[in-house]
Length: 326
Image (spheres, rainbow, N blue to C red):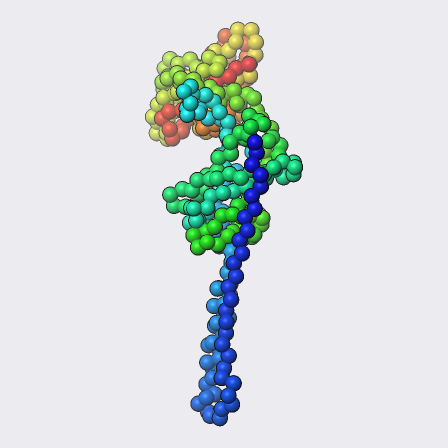
């Protein structure tokens, strides 16, 4: 069942009592006139009173995932849950916020609100602070009513008003990084079945290890099996690591081919049979699983034609990808 809203109230006040001068009349002498100067200096007590009256933290949110106001946030994260006797794929959503100064690590409760469906009950969640008490990680589990932790196409607000900094002060309504409401606001997008399918392969498939060819004539290994997860060892070069693998097109049909990559890798696709370059698109994807950050897409022509995939240069010796063809 869903948890009900929790309201956290915090009030602080500071009082500064200023003592007056002696009421007795006294004879004014030239030396006593220096009391005017003394009164000027005493006026700094007003500044002290301003400082003492501070009731809100100066902490700001330096980074967050998702970012404040971000849209099209993927509503779930896929991961391999090994807590049971049989490991299985599970859903969650991990939110993180990093503050400019240490916070009170004994207070980690936040409240997740559905701003699109205001009748939906709020969810009280307890996060985990980093060792330096600056980064809060909040894991949103799936609900009992749904397999996903967050609703799709929904404006969510993660209220942080219960948090305190190391001095015990609450966040200011004008906290930088929260757009003036002490809450992390973001909007989820729709789900992508193809991306989730590929993530499944990154989580459960044993990678097939291959070593890239140094040149197109160095017998590049085949990497054209659909649903396969490849671990490619690249060759060192002057500007980084790179190399070639092969792909053979379908005998009868043109296909839409997608490589789901674990990092950004410059890639060139060539139809070696026809001797022509093939248009391809390298693009980032919404975060859904740790094994996929980018996709490379291209269309292969039918006829058992040999294609070459030229990777790099890149800083990593190893790259991984799941190949899908349809």
